[in-house]
Image 1 (spheres, rainbow, N blue to C red):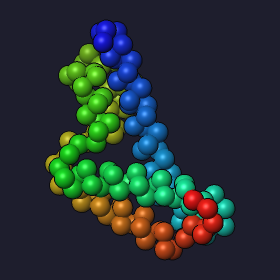
Image 2: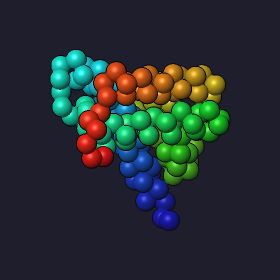
Image 3: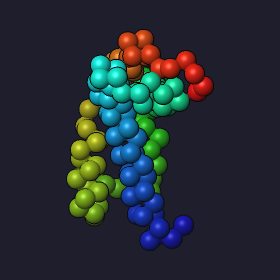
Length: 130
């Protein structure tokens, strides 16, 4: 792979990572709020399954002491992080990558996943087709 392509791919992985993070955070807020305000989309079964599954993958990775596969892929593509990273990419990296031990992430992600499972009962999805 050419040296010019790797930084571009690293940025694409970062964008994908941000989309997943945004989706997960949006769901954490929209599901209880939408249940209260009767928003139909928060009861769409496939959307809710995707939300539970994505957060479950994050929690399992952390429980097994593994970094997110998107983080690993971005690191491999971008090489060493530091001053050579583009400004925006560096700022975003500092926002989403915190210097905490893996057990802290595991505890947080499992707590969030339990919350999402509780939301499944509190604001159940429609029983129609997935």
